Amino acid sequence: MNPKRKQKLILVCAMVAGAGIAIALLANVFKNNIQLFYTPTEVAEGKVPDGAEFKVGGLVAADSVKRIGDGLTVEFRLTDNGETVPVRYTGILPDLFREGQGTVSVGKLNSDGIFIANKVLAKHDENYMPPEVADALEKTKAAGESEKHGSNTVLMQ
Amino acid sequence: MFRWFHKLASLKNFYRLAEILLPWLAAICAILLVVGLYRGLFVAPTDYEQGESYRIIYVHVPAAWMSMFVYVVMAFCSAIFLVWKMKLADIVAEVSAPIGAAFTFLALSTGSLWGKPMWGTWWEWDARLTSELILLFLYIGYMALRSAFDNRRTAAKAAAVLALVGVVNIPIIHFSVEWWNTLHQPASITKFDKPSIHISMLIPLLMMAVGFKLFYIVNMLSRARSVILEREANTAWVTERVKENRL
Image 1 (cartoon, each protein chain N blue to C red):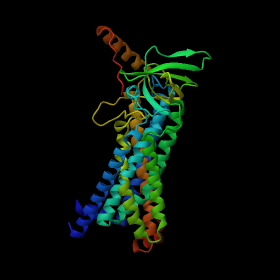
Image 2: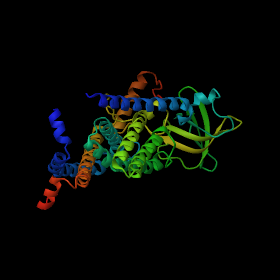
Image 3: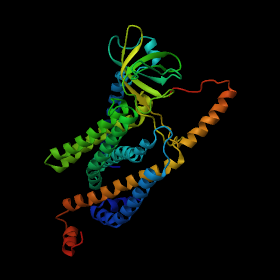
């Protein structure tokens, strides 16, 4: 390769590498800000901003959804299969909201340690299948679970 | 191999090759898009959880893939242009930018339409959505930078540098859902794993993906032909073609 082109090729590679390193360093500095939400464990450890609005993400714990009073207010517990955070929300829930589903709640902790959400978002997973397949999977899973004495196999992504 | 490469790089030969390929590629593209859309929107089963709304993936996912693919093509061509001064590479990068921007816009807008009923929000500043938005700005910046110079060579060089620097955004978009916690779901189809989408839904999706890719190629080739004509307007072969009335 002629030396001038070689030099240019090296220059181009160095430019891309340099930009990559710069972005990597930036991303590392802002790591916590890029995370969309805190996990219930982080909430329990007190890593969340005090008195300010933040987001908590986790699975809606099984049998924890309760509608109270006016029928618009919902209470549920968010879990990451370690810690749980109780959440209270008044408003319309997204279509995908249900027990066992990943959700992200936006709001503040009150003095009783209850998370008062002003927005609840549903998180979807990457699985797509027809209902019949989902049913079949559910059946085999249920069969497997009764063998394992009902151990909880739901894992947080 | 190198001789073939040189031959292709000549604008005249590329113009001719594109002329021959275009009708075939366009026909295959049209068939794939029509059949893929029909099978995706009417034949594929509904999703167990999202119902009918999931069908947005037949447009959203191919558009998002293409938004990244076109950028990689653009950056690759920019590198070739900077190092080897290959004119054709510059032209391909130039005409790819608006197509890539359109794919990015399509991915963002269809995602937003799906996000409202499913997630409960039109927009969320999570890593995937934000990095895809930055990609749109990169495309727009690339086009703006190119048209900001009067001198074509300077414009081409500056734009190529921007395209190359911006390429770091591509792995960020791709891995954002793994590196950080986001609202956007992780990929359903990866190279090394069994796809987590049912086969009856996957086939139309792949048809749409190939259809979108051909759509890009057809669009890129016909745009490149126009740019070649413009740049080579004073050459003998263009004059001859104009005389014979076959452009």
